[in-house]
Image (tube, rainbow, N blue to C red; front, side):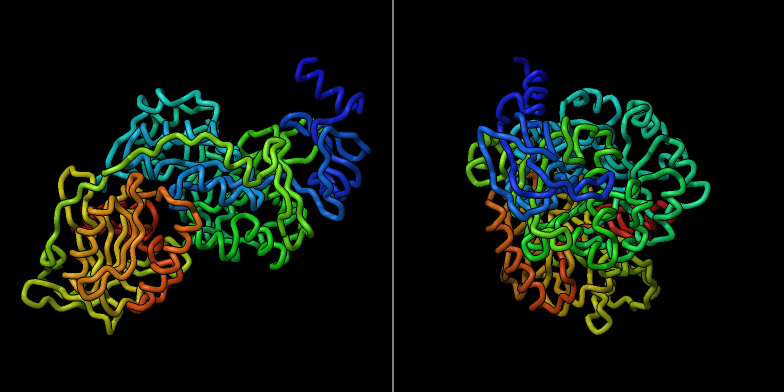
Length: 564
């Protein structure tokens, strides 16, 4: 029989199903009912529920509840600091069976080769990785990236089976003011899915942005902002990353009424936070604990995402749907006991059987050798623009502080938590070094630095000692990128990320352990932030208000211009 005939026959019970899950109840996300009976699977497809079935293989899931596999509707796998294969092994056992990723981190370093790498990797992972095509490489013209991708370049990577559409359109001023390059990309994807990114956009500007056909948005940080965007027909992706934590603020908006138009995403989440808290499973537990109903929460975690991104083959445990199934002890605890992804059990043997393509992007850190004096900050007036960190957000404040110049330099002032921040161009293009001030780290000594620096991924460093900053930046060049903590001229902790300066080639457990050491080393220097390295990385992203820094200088994001 053909695959079609096999599915029909097994669904009818004319012969044994390939796999039967026996003894659980199915949580139906349409009616909210708990349905007793077996679940029959033929190949990668569910063919029966609510009845008794015989199977060639039977898994006893007695007493458990079966829910559809979770869909992370927007993330950058590079921010997990591991390869797609290790991300798969880390997160799939927690119930995430589909990840809709934007590979613009690696694309900003390697261009189309980075996108092609993720497309090829998606063919081998157990999790279904959907690779959106990056819309903003670089994110603006106010930074130096390793590559630039225009509309005509995207044509060469369209048509891969992992594709859905155009990834987050971060250059919202380019949309509103009809920038020709942005218009060319939007025209290329007319009729397809276009993912949004428009923090604090409102009123007629929001209307204009939505008129471009952009239908999803993950940058809402307040209920008022999210409600307005819902009213404009956008689907809101509630985000809970390692830095950007918007779940608590938006939870009250997630109800049985709004759930079909609200989804879950992590955007940027590292292995340490996944180990300590979880991934989408953590979001599910937290939403229910705060008062969202299990029906609304599990809809947002699966069915709503499937509908929002046009993935009609998943999101429900129902005949004809992809066999992405998660078994939990209780809906409230979201304590995952078993995961099926496309009909395959997510266990060690399944992960071991995957083919892994070789890494790319080695030796991509080509920064100039820096000296301590390179981090001096000249100025002839005391009034100084300062980046103000908002803990738990990637939004920043544009502060103004009085810092008197001394001998041609404005020095860090730890008593006021005013420390030096610098961005060093590392793609070997111009050797730019920009400096400024940031408040909110609590740093009392030494320096920390990173090549994870959104989205251009130059080297970003904060410190109170210029010599330590120089040691940190130069060391990152030697280890092919990564995270580092330096004090007294000595490296206190480091994590090498040799794949494009973004990802480790080690297993996620080792990366997790190294992050523990890095966090402790940063804390020993006085750092008060829970996740200092990703917080540092977002200080260089010039599409998130209000004040940021790139290798070309401080950027007033509200006015979308570099400060003189």
